Structure formats: structure tokens, C-alpha cells
Length: 138
Image 1 (tube, rainbow, N blue to C red):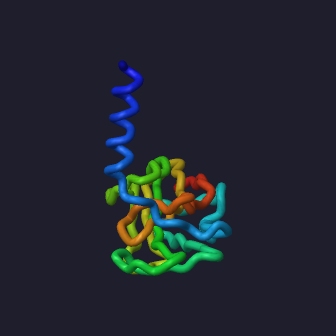
Image 2: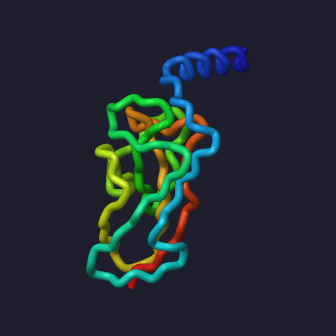
């Protein structure tokens, strides 16, 4: 009985999730700068530039095959599949199609990771994300 109830809940939940936008199978997302292990001077903004191969960039709300837009994740984990990427201080959205940004972080160790989102800020299937890098702000 419990198994049947759990299965019906899972079916109801998965039916309510929007279908994920397919991603090109060879898409490659990366942070061009800063590099992993980089030491950044505190108290001033620094540039983060985004690299993407075998996939295009399009603004949010623009549906075009094999495209998406960047989200910079700071000190957080990837958004689970099928869920909209939050918009907060740890999830920066670049819905105008930007490929770089200036950010300022407090002193300490920080992680940065990029995640592509579709026109509705939902990760693609399969998700397209960069390696997580660690930087130190001193």
C-alpha cells in the first residue's frame, strides 16, 4: 500500500514538472576567468567571463533550439533538474544574454560555477554546467 501511494505521488509530481529543454550533446560550458585557485584582491569588483562551445546564447523568454542563457552560481550547489533556477545573491541571472560580468565578493574562499538555463530559467536536459572553481578573495 505504501509503495502504491509513493508511486502515485511520484507520478503526480513528475507530471507537474515542465518538460526539460533538450541540450546539444556536445555543449561545453566553462569559466574563462578567473582560474581555479585564483587569488583576487578584496575591495574591488573583478570580471568573470563565461565560455560556451557547441551551444548558443539567447535571452530569457526567447525560445530557440540549442540555446540558453547563463547563471552564475556563487557558493552554492547546482539547481535540481526540472526546477527553476532561483534568483538571489547565490544565483545570478544573465537573461539578456550576457557572457561576462563584474562581481565583488567579501574576503574568504568562494566557489563559482556556471549553469545554463532555458528560456524559463530551467536547466536543460542534460544539464549544461561548468566545473566548479574555488577562488580566494584577500
